[in-house]
Image 1 (cartoon, rainbow, N blue to C red):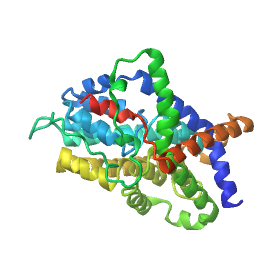
Image 2: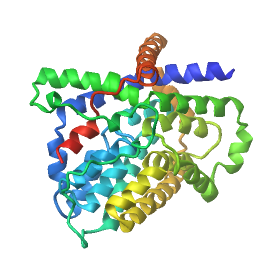
Image 3: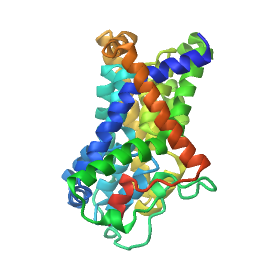
Length: 367
């Protein structure tokens, strides 16, 4: 098959699950109050760290968008441990990425991925420990997210500012309307380019990379190291990392190494790490990186062990997932998603229209 055929096939396979994940993300935007997050992340001790991991895991924020959200919570009184935990669990997984993982990688990877993300986040929070040096800052100084320096492109959604009208109390109908706009305009605008890049890389790997080459380097400790080195500097969200991971997995990379990539890539990038160091300190940065890589490697070995013990056929699992959706539904979903993405890309990069509000800003402003 040609590169274009592989790309179109991957897009059609993932489109229904993407739309499902976007819908759930929009409902969360409408019904999960940001005040709830600030309240529970401000509690001291282990429970705040666990709550931060559990509350952050389903949120549809990338490694860029989570920065202003987490730092807004920090300035609202959240501990360093809870903030670090939130910073890791949120970009590593999400409702949208879990649904796409189920479609493209199978149910086993869809389950092990959020478990690994939450475990990584809790471990990092425990390593950071209690705040011993200073209380959480409460300054009103604006948070500079990792995307603030990306000019002259239009500001990403995580950099946009809510207006006064959106800060007013909202009715249920207004919240639902805002959640639909957030999901099918703002969120798609934020991730469309990276999603296309992810699908493109997956199609390239599937078309041109010999299986024998990836099998040679696709397993063991060195494979984990390579996946970590690739993932650390990347600006990629959990959703758009999934098609790349699928291309790697089905070309010969071990499931454990694939999981390492999906954990490290979304959770780390150079700008985000610089902000963690500045706002939370060297200890938090060391715990952040050590947990993402160390726990990622541990779950990589666990994934390989379980896959061997249970004789998991990942290709068969994904075929079962695809069988749940008939071809017409996949095609219709792909057409709808393509239209939404085309509108989002034109609005963002050609017309320069900023998004009206991102979930991260709602949390940050309440700090």
